Image 1 (tube, rainbow, N blue to C red):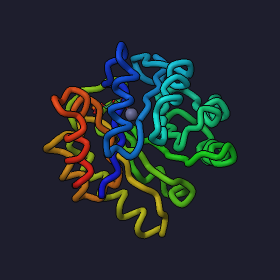
Image 2 (tube, protein in one colour):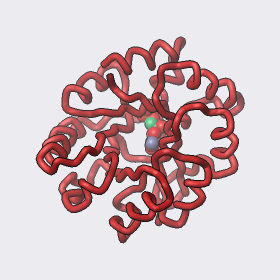
Image 3 (cartoon, rainbow, N blue to C red):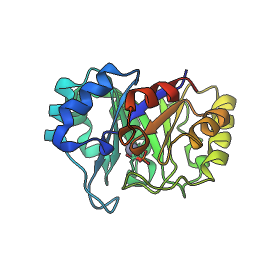
Image 4 (cartoon, helix red, strand yellow):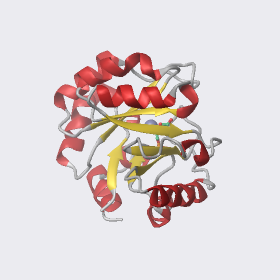
Amino acid sequence: MTIVSPSMLSADFLHLERDIQMINRSEADWLHVDVMDGMFVPNISFGFPVIEAVAKVCTKPLDVHFMIERPERYISQTAKLGAMMMNVHQEATVHLHRTIQEIHDAGMKAAVTLNPSTPVSVLEDVISEVEMVLLMSVNPGFGGQKFIENTINKVKRLRQMIDESGSRALIEIDGGVQKETAPRLVAAGADVLVSGSYIFKAADPESVIKELKAL
Ligand code: DX5
Ligand code: ZN
C-alpha cells in the first residue's frame, strides 16, 4: 500500500477545519504541510501560528516540508508542534549531516528534500542516516504545476542507491502527482505520494485518496 500525504497547500484556507476533518476521515496516512519563506522559493505560504491550529484538529501525523533558507533554525519549534517528520532541502542547509542529527535529537524523523536539478548522488553519504528522501517533481513554491518527467529516472536511481546501501529510507514524491503520474512513480519505486490539487480540487477527495493508496 502506498503512503499518501495530502498537501494542505491546496486546501480551502477559509474552511481549513472542514478540510482537515476530511483528511481525518479519509485513508490518508499523513498531512503534508508546506512552509515557504519567500527567499528559498518565490512564494510565502503560512507559518507556525497556522500549523499550531491545524495540529490541534489533525489526527494524522504531520509531514512538514520546509522550503526555507537554513531550516535548522526552526527544529525545536517544529518538534514542539508534535511533527512526525521534518523535511529540509539539501540546497538550503550547509551542514546537512548536523541538521539531520539535530532533527533526530529533537525527537522527529528526518527527511532530505532535493530540487529537480539536484542529483540523487549528493545523498550518498547521508542516505543511511535519514528516514525519508523527498524528490521534488516540480520546482518548489506552488501547487498545481506540471510534473517533470525526469523524476521517474531519479526515483529509479534513488531506489538503487537505497537498496544497495541497506538504508531503510522511504522515497516521497511531491509535485504534479495525479492519476497518470502516480502509478508510474510507484512502479519506479516511490513509497510516499504527496498530492495537493489532484486531491483537494476533486469532487470526491476521499475516493481520490483511496485510489492513490491502492497503488
Ligand atoms: C510545492 C509543494 C507541494 C504542492 C504540491 O512546492 O511542495 O507540496 O502542494 O501541489 P500539487 O500536488 O498540486 O502539485
Ligand atoms: Zn511539499
